[in-house]
Length: 329
Image 1 (cartoon, rainbow, N blue to C red):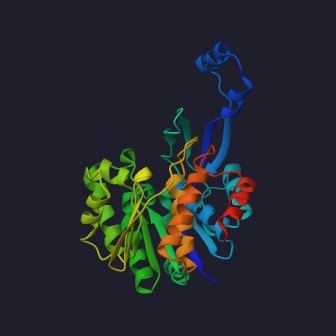
Image 2: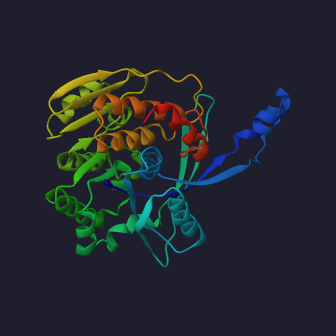
């Protein structure tokens, strides 16, 4: 049985309850509500790599999926761990501080499903997760098949702990663990673009598989095509490169062979928050199960297309289970 570990942060998610809009028939009433300072918020838990872990486990329950992070001992942290257990994402490497709490973010989506985030994460417990990871922990992690982290995972770690993170990655790689990186870039989380580029280049150099998005490359490197991303990544010894480019499709370079895959655009876009996360989870799960690149991309694209038709980062479990039945796994 495969073991996949994801490393990063889970946060408290707050988002506006859009379901109220559907009950307001009159345009004037809807405008009045829109102008009001009072909004009903829904609370959930999410984070890019945690979202990936959840969609991976939901789609491929036979894969042991583990979350590596740090929380506190407050009620939100306890509820988070309970949520991980409900999703069957193992939490034995979710460490707990006595005096820290998880971060929080609020999300707003416009009529096209595009989102705007506001964050409160300066004292997030996940920033100090490396203080818990010792040689014994690394030895346990070295028994995994795959270790996944993102640009956000890197940004969250305090700068003083990043050398410890890279030492851990080096040891995992030496142990034969497949290292996977998604350069999820959030400019506000870095001191400068140069700092992010330095860390991302280390990640590319250490990874076997990379899952970049063209939008992230455009923000950080001013590269706005799949071909440009591929050219940049040529400098690294990546076995598997999967480039996500929205409706333009997926470009892959796997074991020396390049291929392009189209996707069917989604018309009813509600919330794009977890499009890339769900794609990553299903793609990595499919590849871990030995499925072809083509089939893995097909499944991952369908999952992302389903997820963005629903609000929030993590879709209702019952709805997603119904969707899985359509995949003929």
